[in-house]
Image 1 (cartoon, one colour):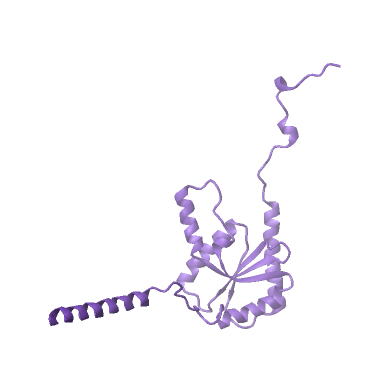
Image 2 (cartoon, helix red, strand yellow):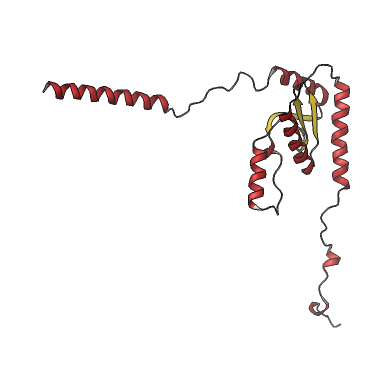
Length: 193
C-alpha cells in the first residue's frame, strides 16, 4: 500500500512538472518589442534630414517591404513568379517617398553603412534592378554627415523627374482605336433610303 501511495505521489509530481512545462511554452501571444525604436539613431537622423529636404513635397515611409510596392508582371511562369515574390518579400526598403495627394510611390531610398560590404552590394544590385524594372527610382546614400538639405532636395527631385520623363517616353501598349476596329464589310447593315 505504501508503494502504491509513493508511486501515486511520483506520478502526481510528474504530471505537475509536465503541466508547468507545457504552460510555459504555450502562450497565446508570445510577443515583445523587437527594439525600442523603429529606426536606429543613424536612420532617425537621416529621416530628419529627408523630412527637411522633401517633407513638404512627399510623404516619407520607413521600413517598407519591397513586395508592398512591386509585383511580378503577368506572363511569368508560376515557379519564376513564386521565386521572384519570395525574393522581394525578404527585402525591406529603408525609406519610400510617395506623392502627398495620390500616395503613388515616387522613389525608394536606401541608407547604406559608411563601409559597405559585399553582401550590401548584392542587395543593392537586386534592389536596383527590381525597382528599375518597375520604373521606380532607387537612390542610395551613405550614412555619413555633411549632406546639405538643398543639395539633397535637388538630387531627389531630379531623379524623380528623370524617371517620370522615362516613363512618359516609354512606348505604351497599343490598343486599337475605334476606327481600327471597323466591322468587316459582310457584317455591315445596308440601309436603303
